[in-house]
Length: 145
Image 1 (cartoon, rainbow, N blue to C red):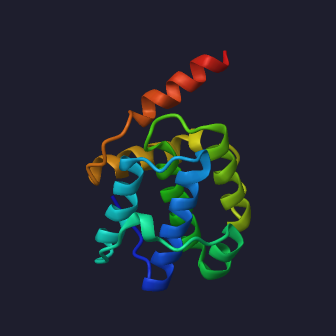
Image 2: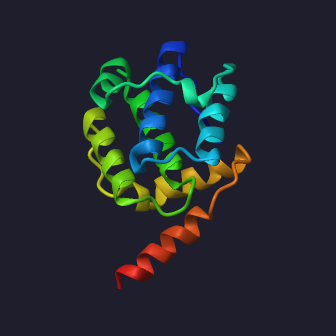
């Protein structure tokens, strides 16, 4: 798993974006908190996910200027959206807003194979309890038929 390392400022920005995606459905679950805190720990930081400063997605975009940082932030946000299984409509809307703010216009990121596979691998590597992302994707495809 190749995880892009963010600077301290970028890390705080990314964690804010992750928390915003997580609470888009008005819930911040234990696995979502664990994911935010795990990303912080991978970067050598010890943060309580409940105290991550809120930022708008436009502010996130202003602070993340490199293409690689923006893409990695979006990949992490997709992983966050999938921590609890199939993302809610509110969560998918939040991902779309983040992607648009970052200038990454990829519709349905939560169902794109490369984003879903990355999310599943990352959640497994970080030992984050989560519903099977790939099973959730398949279940969503069956429901649309």
